[in-house]
Length: 229
Image 1 (cartoon, rainbow, N blue to C red):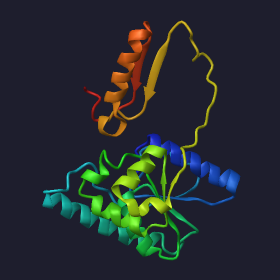
Image 2 (image 1 turned 45 degrees about the vertical axis):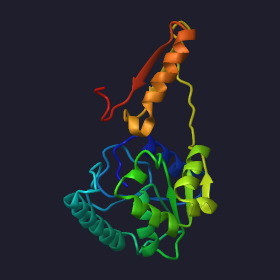
Image 3 (image 1 turned 90 degrees about the vertical axis):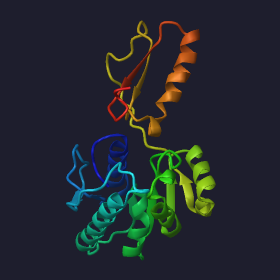
């Protein structure tokens, strides 16, 4: 995976901390390229292979060639740097890599960890055949909520029996000065990308809410490709 810094990275960091402190495990974080944000305190392997992100693949042969060539380099680096270490379990949020990882480490359980809607992106992208192959070959699939479980059931029914709902861990800390009853406000903190976060629904819901609760304000905090809108 990559490490730009965001919600997925925060969750992965929390889980790695849990694994170290509460489970006595020795987690290893494998990244394709140098992290752009702080990484958790654990063993880090950087493969030094840049990835193709956000480029359309269907009907774009040049992008397909770029994707496949970089994936080939990615797999070669995985074999060189990671295979001697193996491990007890492999967890990947890169859905299209699950099948490849199972092929490389056939004796190690491989778990796919889904953090976003399949319908919003994966099922409509040129990567969907890789994702379905990963679903078929991996040992388990983790989703964040019941709606995502239903989505798996609809898009790839064969994976239902090995799909499990595990909610993201939440580390709640009190922050002095945040509570201000004279300033009622709803705050969204996250990526500004409507196809993933469905901010259009948030805006419609808040519009309905604000008609009956005058004085409330909505603040969006974050960055992303839809920020300008």
